[in-house]
Image (cartoon, rainbow, N blue to C red; front, side, top):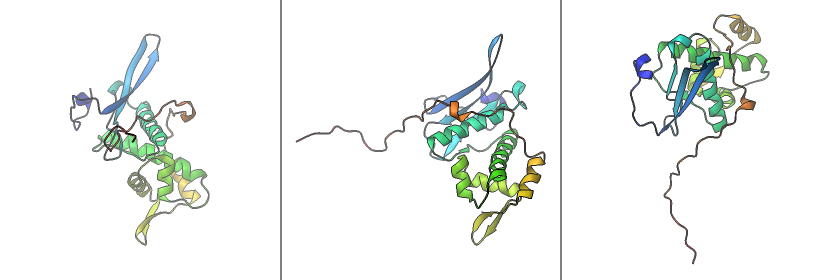
Length: 197
């Protein structure tokens, strides 16, 4: 399916290493496929999404950001940070940057005291690299004494929130209603039988 809409995706016939999360819109006529995302059961690169797609008739309705938000809620349950597999389409880049901006601004708006990029990463499951690039796009991070430091004022956060870049998602994931467990990880060691003497 993604090969019809995403030029940069490679076709895999073996779907066993992937989990698929499907989003449907339901009406009186039944369920209609809106989009989906897939993720590797075990990603050596730390990707929380392998492929994400909202079908063209459903684009620009907030479903893409809902899929993105859902992927990060799963990452939080797995207690890992993640990033989408690259490259992203142009629309994918815009959607992710908009989502990351919203999440970070929402935290920074209410946060009092100091917060590090590592803290934000642990709170959101967004990689530090993605956080840095997003904050740089909003002029909210400086490089000082060999590390990136968040430099914001309540006024700067408020200006961004009121700007067009801050787009609160139409749909959100209620993490309290999410019933999901991470897939079992394959053991790195060899399986064997224990013997007693």
